[in-house]
Figure 1: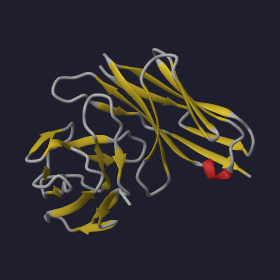
Figure 2 (figure 1 turned 45 degrees about the horizontal axis):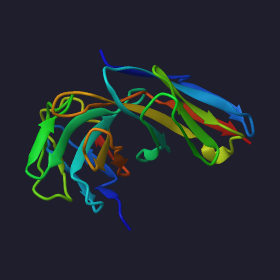
Figure 3 (figure 1 turned 60 degrees about the vertical axis):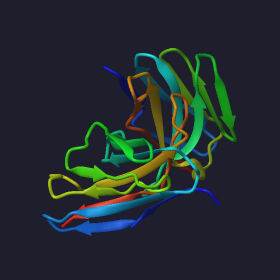
Length: 112
Length: 113
């Protein structure tokens, strides 16, 4: 069964304390892996798309990497404004529709 | 300024009522989607549409209905048959195809009184 898990469920960091979020997936035929940021009460904001193992994408303090079984979202020297829930989603090959499966998210809190 | 709009932001429904959530996009995207988000769970797909006048059920379509009469619009009706409708509803659009990301609207929070 296609599945996406994220760990940890919640992460609390001091400002400037770098860390990584994990997204593990089990799907047949990866079409793409997506990272989103979601603030409370708002819709997810698109961050990155990764397509193949070894690929990396960067945006400000965020860097996403992809292997054959998981993806990491590295946060370097985070600031309080980076506090949000980070969602991982995977597009798997299907029939008439390539299904997108979302993980439950990691809630990040950055303390000043 | 291109984007996706959803209205209303908050919606309250009485038992037995049907309500319709609006979703409009001006990104010229072919594909549109409706998701439901509950605390502690990943987004779950309700319905999707890859082209005007065509739509398909997602994983949790029971108690919901949609229409796609225009490329820009994809309204979702939550019917009285939906037994647990209280949730955060998210509309998304994308260029379609196998590899493209989806872009989300701001969401509608529906509460059943």
